Length: 301
Ligand code: CIZ
View 1 (tube, rainbow, N blue to C red):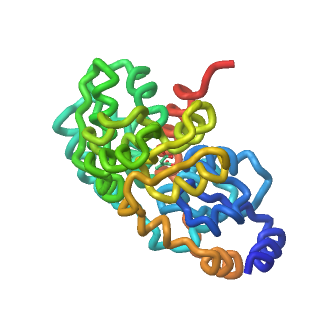
View 2: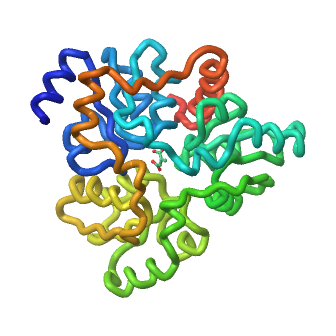
Protein backbone atom coordinates (compact mmCIF):
# COMPACT_ATOMS: atom_id res chain seq x y z
CA UNK A 1 0.00 0.00 0.00
CA UNK A 2 2.86 2.37 0.83
CA UNK A 3 4.40 1.71 -2.60
CA UNK A 4 1.09 2.44 -4.30
CA UNK A 5 0.73 5.67 -2.32
CA UNK A 6 4.26 6.74 -3.31
CA UNK A 7 3.57 5.95 -7.00
CA UNK A 8 0.32 7.87 -7.04
CA UNK A 9 1.85 10.73 -5.11
CA UNK A 10 4.39 11.17 -7.95
CA UNK A 11 1.74 10.78 -10.64
CA UNK A 12 -0.52 13.41 -9.05
CA UNK A 13 2.39 15.70 -8.12
CA UNK A 14 1.19 15.58 -4.51
CA UNK A 15 2.68 16.35 -1.13
CA UNK A 16 1.50 14.51 2.01
CA UNK A 17 1.20 16.54 5.22
CA UNK A 18 0.67 14.89 8.61
CA UNK A 19 -0.32 16.71 11.77
CA UNK A 20 1.60 15.78 14.93
CA UNK A 21 -1.50 13.95 16.25
CA UNK A 22 -1.77 11.49 13.31
CA UNK A 23 -1.32 7.72 13.74
CA UNK A 24 2.32 6.51 13.39
CA UNK A 25 1.88 4.85 9.93
CA UNK A 26 0.54 8.10 8.54
CA UNK A 27 3.29 10.18 10.12
CA UNK A 28 5.85 7.75 8.67
CA UNK A 29 4.79 8.24 5.02
CA UNK A 30 4.34 12.01 5.24
CA UNK A 31 6.61 14.47 3.43
CA UNK A 32 6.10 16.99 6.22
CA UNK A 33 4.99 16.70 9.85
CA UNK A 34 4.09 19.54 12.15
CA UNK A 35 1.36 21.85 13.41
CA UNK A 36 -1.41 22.93 11.09
CA UNK A 37 -0.19 26.42 10.23
CA UNK A 38 3.42 25.34 9.79
CA UNK A 39 2.29 22.54 7.41
CA UNK A 40 0.03 24.82 5.37
CA UNK A 41 2.70 27.51 5.07
CA UNK A 42 5.41 25.06 4.04
CA UNK A 43 3.13 23.31 1.51
CA UNK A 44 2.26 26.68 -0.05
CA UNK A 45 5.95 27.21 -0.77
CA UNK A 46 6.27 23.94 -2.75
CA UNK A 47 5.52 23.36 -6.45
CA UNK A 48 3.23 20.41 -5.64
CA UNK A 49 -0.14 20.59 -7.39
CA UNK A 50 -1.98 18.51 -4.77
CA UNK A 51 -1.90 18.64 -0.96
CA UNK A 52 -3.06 15.54 0.95
CA UNK A 53 -3.79 16.92 4.42
CA UNK A 54 -3.74 14.21 7.09
CA UNK A 55 -5.44 16.12 9.85
CA UNK A 56 -8.91 17.57 10.42
CA UNK A 57 -11.20 19.73 8.30
CA UNK A 58 -10.18 23.23 9.49
CA UNK A 59 -6.53 22.34 8.80
CA UNK A 60 -7.31 21.40 5.19
CA UNK A 61 -9.21 24.69 4.91
CA UNK A 62 -6.16 26.63 6.12
CA UNK A 63 -4.09 24.87 3.43
CA UNK A 64 -6.71 25.80 0.82
CA UNK A 65 -6.69 29.44 2.01
CA UNK A 66 -2.91 29.65 1.64
CA UNK A 67 -2.68 27.61 -1.61
CA UNK A 68 -5.61 28.63 -3.82
CA UNK A 69 -4.07 27.09 -6.96
CA UNK A 70 -3.50 23.66 -5.38
CA UNK A 71 -6.06 20.87 -4.91
CA UNK A 72 -6.43 20.05 -1.19
CA UNK A 73 -7.54 16.52 -0.30
CA UNK A 74 -8.73 15.50 3.18
CA UNK A 75 -8.68 11.66 3.10
CA UNK A 76 -11.71 11.43 5.41
CA UNK A 77 -14.17 14.28 4.98
CA UNK A 78 -15.75 13.42 8.35
CA UNK A 79 -12.52 14.20 10.21
CA UNK A 80 -13.89 17.28 11.90
CA UNK A 81 -12.97 19.29 14.98
CA UNK A 82 -15.59 19.56 17.74
CA UNK A 83 -13.81 22.64 19.12
CA UNK A 84 -14.02 24.41 15.74
CA UNK A 85 -17.70 23.41 15.51
CA UNK A 86 -18.44 25.10 18.86
CA UNK A 87 -18.54 28.55 17.23
CA UNK A 88 -20.62 29.42 14.16
CA UNK A 89 -20.62 32.61 12.10
CA UNK A 90 -24.10 33.46 13.45
CA UNK A 91 -23.01 33.01 17.08
CA UNK A 92 -19.90 35.11 16.48
CA UNK A 93 -21.98 37.89 14.89
CA UNK A 94 -24.23 37.89 17.95
CA UNK A 95 -21.20 38.07 20.28
CA UNK A 96 -19.77 40.95 18.23
CA UNK A 97 -23.08 42.83 18.49
CA UNK A 98 -22.88 42.52 22.31
CA UNK A 99 -19.35 43.97 22.33
CA UNK A 100 -19.28 46.42 19.40
CA UNK A 101 -15.90 47.69 18.23
CA UNK A 102 -13.86 44.99 19.97
CA UNK A 103 -11.44 43.23 17.60
CA UNK A 104 -11.96 39.49 17.19
CA UNK A 105 -9.15 36.94 17.40
CA UNK A 106 -10.01 33.44 16.15
CA UNK A 107 -7.89 30.45 17.14
CA UNK A 108 -6.81 28.43 14.07
CA UNK A 109 -9.24 25.72 15.23
CA UNK A 110 -12.16 27.50 13.52
CA UNK A 111 -13.86 27.20 10.14
CA UNK A 112 -12.73 29.43 7.27
CA UNK A 113 -16.09 31.24 7.55
CA UNK A 114 -15.42 32.09 11.22
CA UNK A 115 -11.89 33.25 10.35
CA UNK A 116 -13.44 35.46 7.66
CA UNK A 117 -15.74 36.99 10.29
CA UNK A 118 -12.71 37.70 12.55
CA UNK A 119 -9.97 40.33 12.44
CA UNK A 120 -7.02 38.11 13.34
CA UNK A 121 -6.28 34.40 13.50
CA UNK A 122 -3.84 32.95 16.05
CA UNK A 123 -2.23 29.67 16.98
CA UNK A 124 -1.62 28.50 20.55
CA UNK A 125 2.06 29.37 20.01
CA UNK A 126 1.45 33.00 19.04
CA UNK A 127 -1.89 33.84 20.75
CA UNK A 128 -0.31 36.05 23.45
CA UNK A 129 1.87 37.87 20.91
CA UNK A 130 -1.11 38.51 18.60
CA UNK A 131 -3.32 39.76 21.47
CA UNK A 132 -0.61 42.08 22.82
CA UNK A 133 0.04 43.56 19.36
CA UNK A 134 -3.59 44.63 18.84
CA UNK A 135 -4.38 48.26 19.67
CA UNK A 136 -7.40 47.62 21.86
CA UNK A 137 -7.75 46.98 25.61
CA UNK A 138 -10.63 44.53 25.12
CA UNK A 139 -10.51 41.67 22.66
CA UNK A 140 -13.01 38.97 21.72
CA UNK A 141 -11.33 35.56 21.62
CA UNK A 142 -13.00 32.45 20.13
CA UNK A 143 -13.66 29.58 20.50
CA UNK A 144 -11.47 27.98 23.21
CA UNK A 145 -12.20 29.00 26.81
CA UNK A 146 -9.10 27.23 28.18
CA UNK A 147 -6.73 28.89 25.71
CA UNK A 148 -8.52 32.19 26.45
CA UNK A 149 -7.90 31.73 30.19
CA UNK A 150 -4.24 30.96 29.50
CA UNK A 151 -3.91 34.10 27.35
CA UNK A 152 -5.71 36.13 30.04
CA UNK A 153 -3.09 35.02 32.56
CA UNK A 154 -0.36 36.43 30.27
CA UNK A 155 -1.86 39.77 29.25
CA UNK A 156 -3.24 42.91 30.93
CA UNK A 157 -5.91 43.23 28.22
CA UNK A 158 -9.48 42.08 28.90
CA UNK A 159 -10.26 38.89 27.02
CA UNK A 160 -13.93 38.35 26.17
CA UNK A 161 -14.03 34.60 25.71
CA UNK A 162 -16.42 32.00 24.27
CA UNK A 163 -17.31 28.71 25.97
CA UNK A 164 -15.72 26.28 23.51
CA UNK A 165 -13.19 23.61 24.45
CA UNK A 166 -11.40 20.63 22.93
CA UNK A 167 -13.08 17.46 24.29
CA UNK A 168 -9.80 15.56 23.90
CA UNK A 169 -7.66 18.00 25.90
CA UNK A 170 -10.45 18.38 28.47
CA UNK A 171 -10.04 14.66 29.24
CA UNK A 172 -6.65 15.34 30.81
CA UNK A 173 -7.38 15.86 34.50
CA UNK A 174 -5.14 17.28 37.26
CA UNK A 175 -5.25 13.81 38.88
CA UNK A 176 -3.59 12.37 35.73
CA UNK A 177 -0.67 14.76 36.06
CA UNK A 178 -0.34 13.99 39.80
CA UNK A 179 -0.32 10.23 39.06
CA UNK A 180 2.19 10.49 36.18
CA UNK A 181 4.46 12.66 38.35
CA UNK A 182 4.40 9.97 41.07
CA UNK A 183 5.37 7.37 38.44
CA UNK A 184 8.08 9.57 36.87
CA UNK A 185 9.30 12.00 39.52
CA UNK A 186 12.17 13.34 37.37
CA UNK A 187 10.03 14.08 34.33
CA UNK A 188 9.25 17.60 33.13
CA UNK A 189 5.55 18.18 32.44
CA UNK A 190 4.65 20.00 29.22
CA UNK A 191 0.98 20.66 28.54
CA UNK A 192 -0.96 22.26 25.71
CA UNK A 193 -2.81 25.51 26.51
CA UNK A 194 -6.03 23.81 25.33
CA UNK A 195 -5.81 21.91 28.67
CA UNK A 196 -7.68 22.91 31.82
CA UNK A 197 -6.09 25.66 33.94
CA UNK A 198 -5.62 23.21 36.85
CA UNK A 199 -3.57 20.99 34.52
CA UNK A 200 -1.44 23.92 33.32
CA UNK A 201 -0.88 24.93 36.96
CA UNK A 202 0.73 21.51 37.58
CA UNK A 203 2.89 21.72 34.44
CA UNK A 204 6.42 23.02 33.95
CA UNK A 205 5.57 24.53 30.56
CA UNK A 206 2.44 25.40 28.55
CA UNK A 207 3.34 24.77 24.91
CA UNK A 208 1.89 24.27 21.43
CA UNK A 209 2.92 21.05 19.66
CA UNK A 210 5.75 22.87 17.85
CA UNK A 211 6.79 24.36 21.22
CA UNK A 212 6.88 20.86 22.75
CA UNK A 213 9.14 19.61 19.96
CA UNK A 214 11.62 22.45 20.63
CA UNK A 215 11.39 22.20 24.44
CA UNK A 216 11.98 18.43 24.45
CA UNK A 217 15.00 18.75 22.15
CA UNK A 218 16.60 21.62 24.08
CA UNK A 219 15.79 20.71 27.69
CA UNK A 220 18.36 18.72 29.68
CA UNK A 221 15.66 16.52 31.22
CA UNK A 222 15.58 12.89 30.06
CA UNK A 223 11.88 12.25 30.73
CA UNK A 224 8.75 14.20 29.84
CA UNK A 225 5.04 13.90 30.65
CA UNK A 226 3.08 15.04 27.60
CA UNK A 227 -0.22 16.83 28.26
CA UNK A 228 -1.79 16.86 24.82
CA UNK A 229 -3.31 14.45 22.29
CA UNK A 230 -1.58 11.10 22.88
CA UNK A 231 -0.28 10.80 19.27
CA UNK A 232 2.25 13.50 20.07
CA UNK A 233 4.34 10.99 22.02
CA UNK A 234 5.27 9.10 18.82
CA UNK A 235 6.75 12.19 17.15
CA UNK A 236 8.61 13.25 20.32
CA UNK A 237 10.02 9.75 20.87
CA UNK A 238 11.24 9.53 17.26
CA UNK A 239 12.91 12.93 17.41
CA UNK A 240 14.58 12.18 20.78
CA UNK A 241 15.54 8.47 20.95
CA UNK A 242 17.65 9.05 24.07
CA UNK A 243 14.73 10.51 26.06
CA UNK A 244 11.45 9.07 27.35
CA UNK A 245 7.95 10.46 26.84
CA UNK A 246 4.76 9.50 28.68
CA UNK A 247 1.23 10.51 27.65
CA UNK A 248 -0.46 12.37 30.52
CA UNK A 249 -3.62 10.39 29.80
CA UNK A 250 -4.35 7.62 27.28
CA UNK A 251 -7.93 8.98 27.25
CA UNK A 252 -6.67 12.07 25.42
CA UNK A 253 -6.95 10.42 22.01
CA UNK A 254 -8.71 12.45 19.32
CA UNK A 255 -11.08 10.16 17.37
CA UNK A 256 -11.14 12.59 14.45
CA UNK A 257 -7.37 12.69 14.05
CA UNK A 258 -7.35 8.88 14.04
CA UNK A 259 -9.83 8.70 11.14
CA UNK A 260 -7.04 9.11 8.60
CA UNK A 261 -5.51 5.78 7.58
CA UNK A 262 -3.16 4.59 4.83
CA UNK A 263 -6.13 3.09 2.92
CA UNK A 264 -7.96 6.41 2.95
CA UNK A 265 -4.85 8.26 1.77
CA UNK A 266 -4.54 5.79 -1.11
CA UNK A 267 -8.22 6.10 -2.05
CA UNK A 268 -8.11 9.87 -1.94
CA UNK A 269 -5.10 9.93 -4.29
CA UNK A 270 -6.79 7.39 -6.60
CA UNK A 271 -10.14 9.20 -6.76
CA UNK A 272 -8.82 12.75 -6.16
CA UNK A 273 -11.42 13.31 -3.46
CA UNK A 274 -12.65 14.43 -0.96
CA UNK A 275 -11.57 17.93 -1.99
CA UNK A 276 -11.71 20.81 0.51
CA UNK A 277 -12.16 24.25 -1.04
CA UNK A 278 -12.34 27.78 0.32
CA UNK A 279 -13.14 30.28 -2.39
CA UNK A 280 -14.32 33.81 -3.13
CA UNK A 281 -14.99 36.37 -0.45
CA UNK A 282 -14.67 33.88 2.45
CA UNK A 283 -11.16 32.98 1.32
CA UNK A 284 -10.13 36.59 0.84
CA UNK A 285 -11.38 37.67 4.29
CA UNK A 286 -10.05 34.57 6.06
CA UNK A 287 -6.67 35.11 4.38
CA UNK A 288 -6.62 38.65 5.75
CA UNK A 289 -7.03 37.33 9.34
CA UNK A 290 -4.36 34.68 8.78
CA UNK A 291 -1.99 37.17 7.11
CA UNK A 292 -2.38 39.68 9.98
CA UNK A 293 -1.38 36.90 12.40
CA UNK A 294 1.62 35.93 10.25
CA UNK A 295 2.74 39.57 10.07
CA UNK A 296 2.64 39.89 13.87
CA UNK A 297 4.13 36.51 14.68
CA UNK A 298 6.96 36.34 12.13
CA UNK A 299 10.20 37.76 13.57
CA UNK A 300 11.40 40.74 11.50
CA UNK A 301 14.69 40.08 9.67
O1 CIZ B 1 -2.99 24.01 14.87
C1 CIZ B 1 -2.49 23.01 15.39
O2 CIZ B 1 -1.67 22.34 14.81
C2 CIZ B 1 -2.99 22.61 16.73
C3 CIZ B 1 -4.43 22.48 16.86
C4 CIZ B 1 -2.25 22.38 17.78
C5 CIZ B 1 -0.82 22.69 17.96
O3 CIZ B 1 -0.45 23.16 19.05
O4 CIZ B 1 -0.02 22.43 17.09
